[in-house]
Amino acid sequence: MRHFLATAALGALLIGAVPLSVFAETPKDQLIVATTMSNILTLDPAAITGRETVQVLNNIYDTLVVLSPEDRSVQPRLAERWEIAEDRKSIRFHLRADAKFASGNAVTAKDVAWSLKRLLARNLAQSSFLKTRGFKLEEADKLFVAENDQTFVLNIPKPDDPNLLLMILAQNGPGSIIDSQTALANEKDGDLGGAWLTLNSAGSGPFKLTQWKSNEYIILTRNDDYWGEKAKMKRVLMRHLPESQSQRLMLEKGDIDVAYSLQAPDLKSLEADKTIAIESTPGSGFYYLSVSMKDEKFANKKVREALRYLIDYDGLDKAVMPYYGKLHQRSLSTGVMGALPDQGYKLDVEKAKALLAEAGYPNGFKTTLRVLSEDPFMKAATAIQNTLAQAGIQAELISGSGDQIYGAMRERNFELLLGRGGGGQQPHPDNNLRSIAYNPNNADDAKLTNYQSWRTSFFDEKLNKMIEEALVERDVAKQTKLYEDLQAYMDEIVMSIQPFSEVIDTAAFRSDIKGMIVSPWLSRFEEVSKER
Image (cartoon, rainbow, N blue to C red):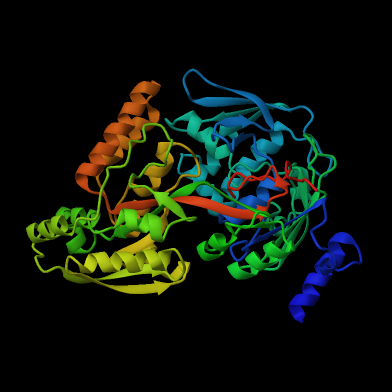
């Protein structure tokens, strides 16, 4: 009863006094999106975490540049054009003269400089994107320069690839441009508008935030003063519906237009329904099996090599990973510069047994395998538990929430762990490698928890230097070759993280929805329409 009343109230809020349930289908000028909102804890661009929050910000904030959903190339947004300096130490951006925030204030280079400086000053989750590239708050006024209202210069603090910095600035969170006047007008106790921006928006995007009720719904209203082409939808309602079956039933009935959190069984049951389209797109990162090299067993290279042959890659790809991921064994995302084809590892129990015997474990050993208590993680872990057992490795499954499982990884308190990660938000090999392979300081007290290599206690000084060298190589052909050589070296030393699948994002939506971009990292609803 309470669920019905909440739905009716939402319907009245969106479309007048008529309850939503009266309509056989959703209104033509309103998009109803079902998703999971438990990770949406704030809408302050400096503090957000999770792709679901990025999806909201994509529609209410603009960035200087954007990544094309088609080929992930860097395209103009607030910046009409830009130039990378010959010495690669700066990027000059030329802003659109007609861009305005939802408040009516003009978007200026001062807002850009202020937004980036604020990111460092707030020192929250998203600041790591700049801090890891050498940006420091005390140098912000020299690094972020507004030459005039339409010209912004980003000075690069240390040798880097400017193309990667463009990709970072294309992502909402680190790249969100905030209306500085509006944010400062709502500042409290020097928080740079942080408390206010948790629940409100100050962007220049095609929509503006109308209402957010935590773990219930978010309402976005079209920004009719938007500088670009006006959104076709008058409103977007994003509903918190964590249960996959509920999303499927409501999608089938036409009560929602888009379902973002469907599990594989529900997606499979929708395949034959001609009124519903299912679309998958490359996501970011990998599903992987990782080891802790603090454990003497897994510090042994032969043991790690044996694990390569105790994963049934093809079986997982066919039986467990549809709609979640696709077979992938490299530590670089598909399509990035220098990415080599997969190594072609196959399940080979006899080869694994021989390697274990060489390592001094002819009868295997006992260990633990930590895993999130949800699919596809549990099914993949159970399958790997079975193939490990064929070589004598008895792995006890320890399941739990993300905080419990990844928390143990961040504390370096695990043996085996099946997880998801490895970068990939920026289509550049360094984005993967900084996450999965680079470790500048392996000491326990370094607490470099952003680096999965640190979490697994993996450290290789030569590999670190190879990653640093490849990043700053200016000749594209040479840079590509360096990334190819780097992968060959990673194969040789046997990494602590072995990918078995590359993440894909899948959504289902009514077939009359056009212009839908499935990837939460790249989706904007401004081009979505309904052909009815």
